[in-house]
Image (tube, rainbow, N blue to C red; front, side, top):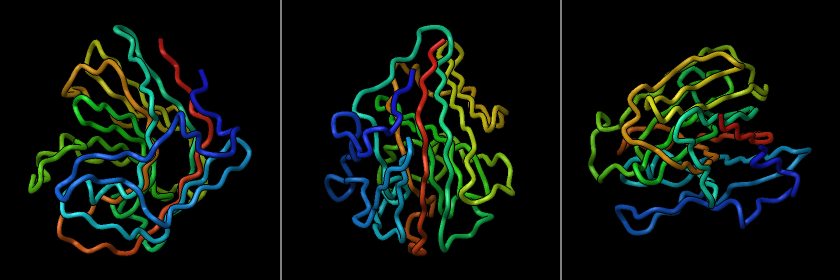
Length: 229
């Protein structure tokens, strides 16, 4: 099933929205004021250059711009939920060999456990990211449930690759695939998940209290396919 093919040439308000959450200083909207969106042939291009917003607590300072599906995808009681998408990333004014400095990617988000699972890239490196979205103010990095894992380097900026996320509820496993090759798996997902929202994000993983570096990122993403088995 194709969840989104971007053929409408605009972000459909009945399907997608900017993610919002209670924050340390009130309601926080994960949106960069200078964000731009363009639509090509079944492709969405989302760019921010540079990142400007700064919060006092992770993850509010990590996810600079986060678009999330309004309706969730149901997870099979048994079997595997597979999401596939091709995307390319270009980043500006970042360290190309430090993935956490600036990146973009595709996410599955569980609102009940406040956990996000993402396939990410900065155009040079690709990786997997698993993070709690609702850390309390002042939480240490150790409370992030899983660290970022790099797949391999020497990707070409702007080059499209196929990313696959698979969740197997019966054994609490989330797998991350790059160009049909498994490169990372989380085998102790901290909750039984029965539905997930899809997300597109531009982000950094800077430590709390460190200044922004003025990085920018561009995500070029194609049709999103949902494969329940």
